[in-house]
Image 1 (cartoon, helix red, strand yellow):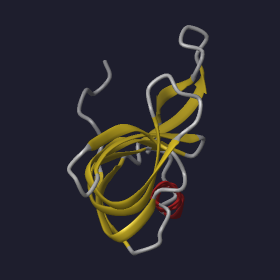
Image 2 (spheres, rainbow, N blue to C red):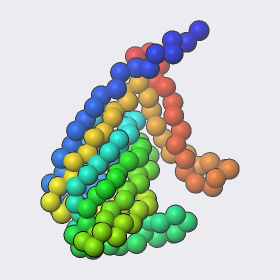
Image 3 (cartoon, rainbow, N blue to C red):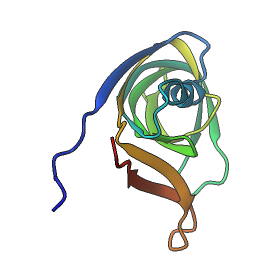
Length: 142
């Protein structure tokens, strides 16, 4: 019988500087750790540009201005990321959806990643949904 106890997780707090592309930086952080599976647990901060793809849309919508990150969460893998974010503009109007490349940090972004060294994530075509979906594999022999 397989031991049901999960392996160790590693918390990795990040602070991203002004001008940093949020999605690119998160994917680079995963790569730099030589890990194939992570979750973004939460993120806060500000953006000057947000590229958010709404549900069912083909292309991202670009938002510009003083934007506050209210939530940021998702999965990271070497073959793709699935990140969701909600942001508020200077009037408090909230927009949310899929995080696309091109989200630029305005003053800071403070993010908590959980690295899963005993797992490997990939995004593979799912014939049922028609999209690249998360595939989780346990790395044995560690």
